[in-house]
Length: 245
Image (cartoon, rainbow, N blue to C red; front, side, top):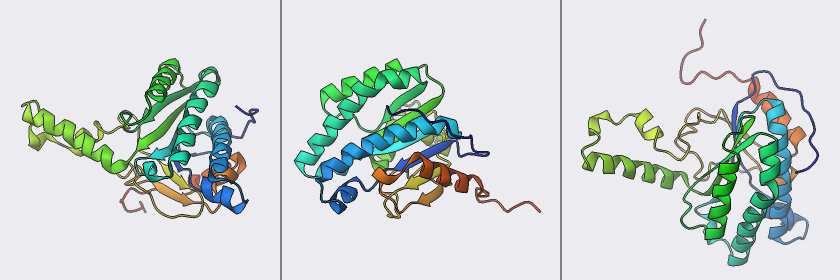
């Protein structure tokens, strides 16, 4: 990873931040470069943001790396992305373990290349005891697929007689999502100026705050990240309740 820069911890910093890292291809196209060049630059930006997050006060960072819809992109681009994911694991696992970053992957792994799945499992095992930051990487992730998978698990338990349908609660469903064991995101950031979730954390984002940033992901610096976090830290979150008077 790049050289570590210490940042001042932000009071009331959102503890779980999720990011839709959008705009790599657009960033490259605006510079007359291949779309894949933007993805390479995007990986460098991931390194910087992961390094800065704990110092700023972030405890969980969830990044949207590859959606279930991204398979529809050109074959060459998908191959480059899979290669980048493999390279990321190989190059970063030692540093992430040393700096106390626990990594977990969420999404449907079955469609991913076998060698990548093996590397993902290795990285999760190597960093399992790390506590300074949890880095959750959504890879071949789709929120609708996540909900369908959770419902299937509950349906199987009902069919087996292990679960009464009347006992299914929001907590029960949430416990069967890919993100089980982690709190919902306090803040969701999307770069590149787009203002939509794109099938990302639909259940978990019910009361999340949002920040839509005009800069494309390769231009989303740690300094800009800190600025967004400070603004979000000043918001009042009421979770559907009326402000106390």
